[in-house]
Image (cartoon, rainbow, N blue to C red; front, top):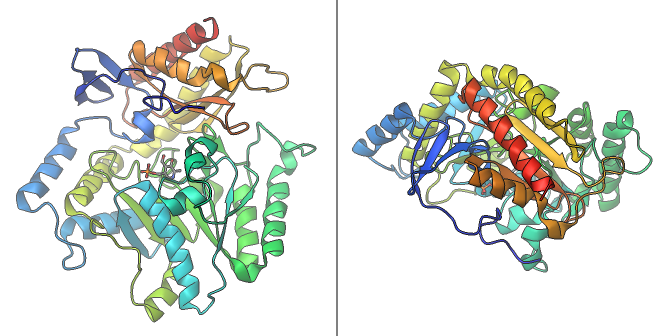
Length: 440
Ligand SMILES: Cc1ncc(COP(=O)(O)O)c(C=O)c1O
């Protein structure tokens, strides 16, 4: 199948002019409500005056004090803030310029950890089906997103994939109540058959984003896979690039599962899209051998810890905390999800509405009884996305989660400070777009 021109089914991209809160405006004067925060990035909406002022102030002093020659207040304060927001569970942070680099860093830190311990055979990664971890070759290698991998097959790392954790699409013969145990046993078997001495890490998205359309794992899953990883001295890497930094109603998505991974990746909501910023967080237990043997993490890049990006992240996190926006996401998110469910209940083709906080996925199915997807050629999710866009609503359509090409989902991920009226507007415009698409 050919790639779509914009990736979202929009034939001619409008020219953006400015943003204001939850809205963006194009050069023709058209207004769009940002119902998905772009790709789940804009947690404070657009053109927030306090964030802009913080960036501008930093730029007036210096844009970037090269990380490997200087530290800075922005870098130090953001480091302390993020470590605190993570409950003191991590020891070190390596800042990056994207989510892909945060994942790349996580994979390399896992390898470096075992190298520092003299376990050079522990080189192999296990990941999950229907996952997305990024576009760099390592991150792409641990991703199972057929359309995005296809052109690079043959040059990717040899990675072992285990099943997705999707309660809406259960493996044959497995009851919902047994899913977590079933998947943990599968991971255990995969590690055993590779040989635990060869496996470095298991990477997963606590709530799958674009590759599944917001899929939270079943209760008990995260704890069960952590126990399996610990048993075999395999590191657990949580990719919270999309679901982290408050989007699901707790600062870390895995807080709700009661576990701390060995390594965690964040990006999108960290600086809310004001300046590119990601980060890899590392626990003391993972960092100690590296510091002891190698001194420092060997994942740094030229722009690691860019000062203006850190100033943006610091301002975003300050506002999110001061205005209790993660609490708002948790409480308003539950009602928002209910409102979406209620508005879409009239469509038989809405098979599932799921998610946490301000991270909601809507799955469209051709046959609700069998959960059979629409034919990939119909490109239903992109059609919904394009119709919503024409009507002034930005949502995030995704495709291919059922078999690599078929499967239609829409992600809704509004800014944490979106007003009640804006949330209502998202629901009504989304419903209108789905109706128009289904009856086309
Ligand atoms: C879960 C997850 N990991 C990693 C990435 C890659 O992040 P980036 O696009 O910033 O490189 C994404 C991007 O969508 C993501 O959703």
